[in-house]
Image (spheres, rainbow, N blue to C red):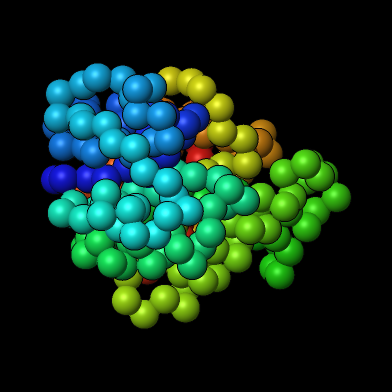
Length: 203
């Protein structure tokens, strides 16, 4: 497939790019500084400003799907969604956060006392973006929330999927490697199972 990847040089975006290349997709890697995009088969780097709707829509046009890996606090949801819709891409996949996952009925992770204060604004913006997508009538979207802890690690291809609740392992931990997060996202791209839904991934 032809994939437009917004935020291709970021922490998650770079893992998504590597996974897309590994599976033979053609990727337009969109970044503020395209010189930082690593070379790879089928990869073309392109500069685009996520705050300039017209230019971003033009960069996204002609692709089968758009994957967005940007901080919610660093983007304008209206402009981003409008650019994706104007591009004509058939699918839109979003790198989400864990903060909006439920830890108990009616209680989201970002509302717990232990949630780091420095990440709360970004997490709540991510939750608001998800709510906006849930009210979106045009896009075929998917929002993937990671486990509470996502960090560099091993690509194992072995993990669990869930929906709106935080997944914990037998030791009460919620974690996933960035590499396995990318596997779960590109699995969803290739074999859609969560259209117009949020889902989550953890060990």
